[in-house]
Image (cartoon, rainbow, N blue to C red; front, side, top):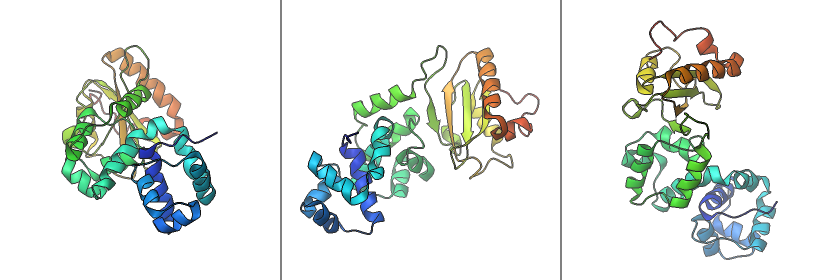
Length: 254
């Protein structure tokens, strides 16, 4: 399958692949048969290679470097945009986090695709830091991907489980994941933020056991309870925290 080059996504991947090989832009330019300024434009998303040049790039690095992201380009568009904007300003992830008023983990998870659809207020903070909004086509693709498409269930939204002042204050179902993206806990409540704050002092509520989190809004309490029970059953042995009842004290469901 041909790779459909997306400047904001593939430019960042190209740069990372080049650095992994310990090549300069001139080294890559020689291998591909272009000038160094052209490589610079590709990496910053200011230009795209032709089909022939893409073939030369693939020959230099191997197809696998680009295929996985090409196949999931809809999911990765936001990650590519944030990363390209940050690098264009010469900022580190920590610098962006400080300017946006979010955690380093939030920026890391967005750029690596672990947080595909962050909360609206998180996105707005990043937009303010950059001084420009996320392009509408990127936001539309992210929203479409996050849409669960089921009555009574909202979109799948990612959040930082350690940002206690920025937790989702809506009713719904939430899932906590460890550093390997394995779901380790499923919870539900009328106010998700209150449930999360109730976990904060638990012995298991720390990285890498809890690394990131996602939620869907579900207003109906009966539906929330049903979904939670089904999800715990699907998780089987991974739901060790739920099954050992280390955080299911009486009255802790709200």
